[in-house]
Image 1: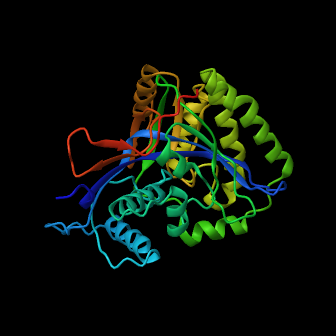
Image 2: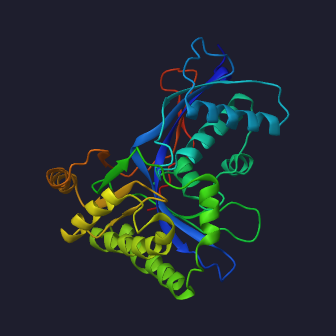
Length: 336
């Protein structure tokens, strides 16, 4: 089998930590803050040759094939691919499942048929990354990310800042897989029905990101970083509360967040439309202690609680399973 016959891609999940400017008075809107995370990922195999066993017809598998066909159709290629999904990010949980799957499939198809597509090309064809560049940035670079928002052109938001997330910091994730966050038409309509975002709050958030959040991650100052993210989350979450039923879309997660906030944890929030909640901690020990407290005080019946790290590398490609033939999409950014 030739090297170009089969490609596997492993793409990381991401946290969307909030928007800086939902007002858009300067001509650019949104401006996202987010990061790639470890352990939760989409892992796919895309092949020109149909797989012998095609029994896995999950919803994600169907969507993956639709993404592949859109790429092939855009370049008038009368070809077909087989896609196997080994692992997938939970759908509509606030962890970027759709964008990561789209980019993984699009990038694999591009490699298989020598299309030389950029991630921006793939995003436009598959209608991903229109509001936020965090998903594309996580796929390409990993790390802590900020994008410059959506301007008046058709260009997708681009990453303006990228920095390594400290290795010793941890994130406690609360995932309710029984519930789904807003997506599709409901998400589109939600943005239309929201009240205008006050310009003074947009100014405050931009000030907060540039003068608290960014310096603190460069200096590895956990206290200021956590406080900054928590403040960003509170302001943005309050704005979205009329649509999602509160600062948090899931009431069980909301109760846990109130509990941990009273314990002194300030870096708390919800990723995107949720329902996934997150709690920043300064160490692995702190994270494990917190999880024990949560479990001893709450039933957590429908919740998955994970302790994860930030991920400072992007997606990984592997062609035809030759040993040590692993290529990362991103070139490691050395600038700290």
